[in-house]
Image 1 (tube, helix red, strand yellow):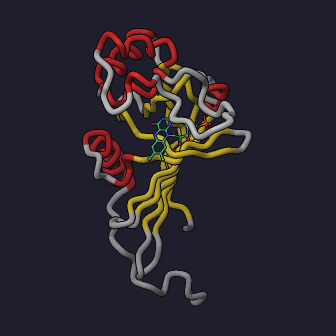
Image 2 (spheres, protein in one colour):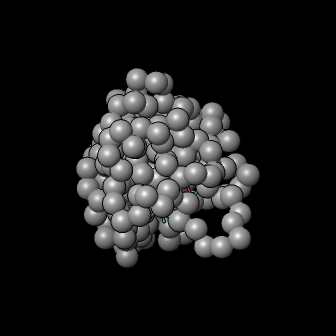
Length: 198
Ligand SMILES: Cc1cc2nc3c(=O)[nH]c(=O)nc-3n(C[C@H](O)[C@H](O)[C@H](O)COP(=O)(O)O)c2cc1C
């Protein structure tokens, strides 16, 4: 080839299978570690809109990611439906984009996600009004008797009706690794995996 497209030495990214496994390793680590950069996803809805959400669960065998949200929030209106999530690790210089169909977790899984979350997280669901509701003054949208403390288990339970667990079934996954020697990109779809131009 004389067109120069392959003139640069390529980084050694491993096989497509290695990349797939490394992505799920990273997502599982992010669930376990607050410090992992993939802990925070940008979750995009079709309208379009995008917002930060915490990655709460990753299941490589099911191919699913889980995010928690208030059922009254605007993003909840897009579930079930197609969603996308975006992750970036600046130290590894790896971007991961996933797209898929989102569903609500079934009741058993929803209860398990609720029980495994901290009381400080469950506190958010005690908000008296829906996220995004206009207010004539600055508001934390929490009951005043919970100021400066976490709810008890019993108090937190009042928020459970508003708690939703979004399960995103990953259909396509786009992996991009930035490198001085040249960026490398791979795409994973139900049809298979392929390298793609970055
Ligand atoms: C660091 C960070 C983490 C957040 N985590 C969540 C989350 O896990 N779930 C959630 O519903 N909102 C989370 N939010 C708030 C959302 O970004 C958003 O403001 C809120 O959910 C309302 O979104 P909506 O109006 O698009 O529904 C987080 C915000 C930040 C800045």
